[in-house]
Image (tube, rainbow, N blue to C red; front, side, top):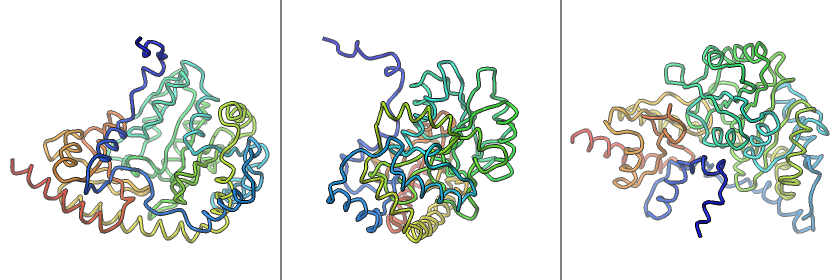
Length: 390
């Protein structure tokens, strides 16, 4: 029996993640330096781990409120008010989710009907296109280039708007480019959103990992709170990927709709993870600052090293990704990534995995040790020189 005939058209139309292919290959090899995975190499801070373990030992293994622990939601309100001068009602306007991935799905599913269009910049996180299609929406991508440091512009967004456009999805800092949209461009984008009455989904999962500039919460811009769903979480900033806890904040009426979907899909985020997240907000600032400083050190190493090798790399201002251009090698990005892995045991991700606009680039995550990045650069240097001579 061909069981695949039972698969839905929706599932069949969504391709597997281009990132996972390389992770599967890496898992079969030895002596690989991985610049591929977008995950902190730091362990979760011990006080945070203890705060997650203690409730388990005390028997707190039951569901929380659908919206999440009220203590955590109250702390999140204070956290956002302190950092970004944006306050939310913990009861009605904050929802704790299973990572930002769930928050992203809820935001799209609660705002987009089949046929509605959602605009987002490309290259982009691989889930954006897939989740839009899961909910029956039409993804509309706006290419970005090194000419604007991979920052999307208001002009490009407005040019993509049609009568079917309902939502704008922003990602700043961006995965895979590390781009951070500056205040002037964000303000112009806000004007476009208001002019065309768009709901804005603002993915700010890397909000604390910004270098040499200040992160701006989109909801904090004039007039944007009422039309913005902010997505943030603990995976990247606090090295808590496996804990699977994120959150969204937005207007009460929209959060109520997302809460309904969350109730049927999830019930509530993991209880122990929520207690750990609360502790991260309480004591995690010094850990965040230490990790950000170390990422910055690695960032300067890898960007400088790549540019010296002739792999032109726009300076990333956020997250922990470099996105160098590899066109000078004469290879496309998939060939470059495959040959580099096989010949020098360095894993990177082809830029085209993040959309057609990523062709000719590769993503290198500097969420690995400084000394490993040094070795990786040596190997990449040998690889580039060897193929340059061919």
